[in-house]
Length: 412
Image (cartoon, rainbow, N blue to C red; front, side):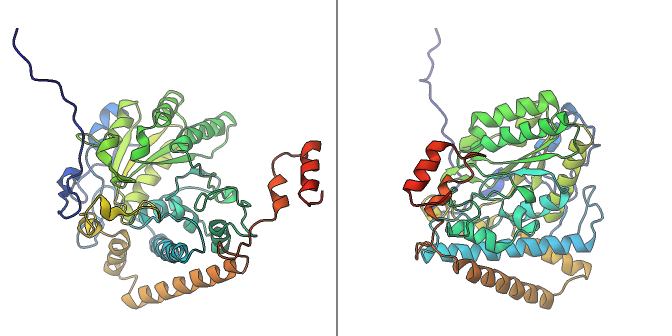
């Protein structure tokens, strides 16, 4: 018999560690405007190339090019820019507040603002998003009051969730923002179920599910794809590939040698791979997927290629596992700068207007934080009343809880 070498396993590694420069050639980018736009009723066998190429609209000069460059009203673009800036400024102030010990924990979406901002504008009222903890831009696009969000972060006396959720795990039903779960990937299967229920009720509302690249390794991700395909659920399956799941590179979850979009095709779901830092590409792909879902053509999986510019959370130090300047070297750039450049090129925006908007939003966020802090912060212990933990558990409070409430000094 021919002798064989000992068997060995392959353990994926990122293309750089602290102290070296990242080689981003693994991303396999497409030039702006070169990826085709298929018909809405495309079948997976005819869309395989879209799972491996990268849909981009904005070129290096800020011009919109190619088949995905649909005409978008300047008002929508300006609203998108405002939402992205508002999200980034909000993130910055809340990160500072956490460092000041006014809240216990925070998670930024730095570098990913275009995805939620554009996607929200492509959805209709009543559609339901099932987000992760990094889609706060969806809420900013829906103009949810900042005071309400900050009170939730501070778990104070005006926390709308009464201290029952970790900071950033928002729940805003009226804004189409389903309660965030601390358990990874559960929201994906929940979104498919919600979408199926909408169809069963003969409704016209669709669902939008969100997951990170790391969480695609969870079994709920695969279960969601199976149900979405089999029942042609009216759902958009969003995979935010920001290259890192806490401290593990996206290749550990299966992104090496293939794409996350390719998993959708393998399950019979037409899938797109999109530049997540290109507001116009995100908007165009989101509209395309929403029209498919609302037109009874079934689900779409979209891999948004972006970069997590900051730490995973305030409990993380990314300099321990990746180069400190990675985001500056990321070839898809800053989503805010790219949309600003496009608006300047169109002649509907100026540097002066941009600076004025930044100052306006900084004042808005600062005023909201001041108002929210009046109801308490982590520093002063102004938390929801003890009696509030007995509320919203049962429609009619049972006798044993009534007794416990009275023992706790509360009134019925």
